[in-house]
Image 1 (cartoon, rainbow, N blue to C red):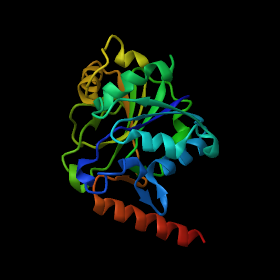
Image 2 (image 1 turned 90 degrees about the horizontal axis):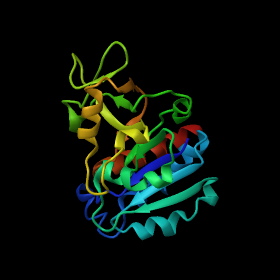
Image 3 (image 1 turned 45 degrees about the vertical axis):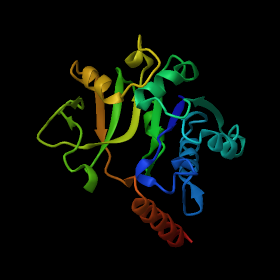
Image 4 (image 1 turned 120 degrees about the vertical axis):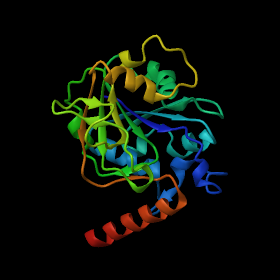
Length: 227
């Protein structure tokens, strides 16, 4: 199974840090965010990785290269300076992603989610990993029904983690351009074609300089505990 890391976001809330550095290359515990994710994916058996990029994207290619030093084969899907939104970025990368289900991970999250578990999952159109609602998204995004289907609303709503499995058919007949993911997911889940699971382990959305500092502290403390 191939994996795609979404790395095309402008990182407006991270400014001025992202004025000269793309958000995925901001560091925590001395290593760029995206390198933490690549290491996790490779350890979980994902060796073919596609990375999209936009703002300052050449820096990402220059830093990561072809993936050799990570034990991966990295391909790139450039989107120009503006980016294509999440679904647009995936659609643009479909020629690199192949005909089977693939994993997509946001480039600005940190987690200890066990990615290897997803490799043997049979899915319809999509499978989403949901987490408890953080402070910045108290209302949540989606619910889960008793059969494990993602639903628009439920007694309890959770936050979409930015980790999902998708089949190319979810994006079929869509033009290349700026397209958001949420409307496509909502159309599919209205037909009960999106499954999901709740993850209760470590997860952070690294959307602000403050959260980057918190992540740096978390990694540093974890490393000292393992020393």
